[in-house]
Image (cartoon, rainbow, N blue to C red; front, side):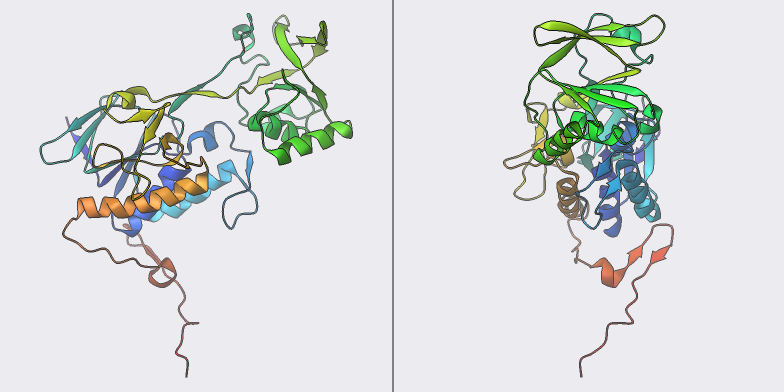
Length: 352
């Protein structure tokens, strides 16, 4: 069977995987991306494209979907290959030191370097133990929010105590007819600032917060009409159009778990003192999927990891070549397609 050959094979097309293409491209390295989803972007595209992100350097606020759009535009000169809707399953180490990665669709990808940037891995929502919840899926029950406008002028109940529950309570309060946040505890696990914002919305009667409380039954005929909750030792019926339980995701590494990598609590252990390489030389793990002392699961940290990883990849692919660090402000960006993004050096002059 024909092999797709590349310098760096990237597993995962989230922000970190996409930025890896850019950093590799600056070094003249070609990339190919495998992702189980049908379009690039990972969770930013699939789960919360309209969710604002505030900690991307130089971007006071940017929607997750817009960040992906910008990254795709940034890497366009380096023409990466894509195998979307495919999952990396098997790994074969060849005699020449390269790797073959075989997907669930049977396609074979060959490279000297593999960069696992799979975020949380493949994932599925953690569902609350409510007997008839499956029946109402797609009929008022959603485990993720792709388009907030779907909930405009609707009654929405969100359940959960983490960042996602808090963030979406804040965002949907701007457009929904009514937002109710339910949590089984009085304390929330999310960011302090988000908890403060939710408290302020509650104080202004812009949302309703019911704690400690738990949803135990969904009601309706053809679609969701109301919820039954346990609250203060009694049962309460709440009318609603939508129920959004945000209890997190159950991450799974899939076939990658059988590659012989060192894994700790469903994350891949890497050497963070140098280049984020795994226990298998030539295989790196960057972004949320890796773990090391002091690890922070932030997109901006993943960008840093990708940058150092690409420098190490260059040395593995071209051991006899010396790589000289070039600043894009001086060298510009030379695309594989012949395009150029050249900096304006007219302001650079000698001091007399």
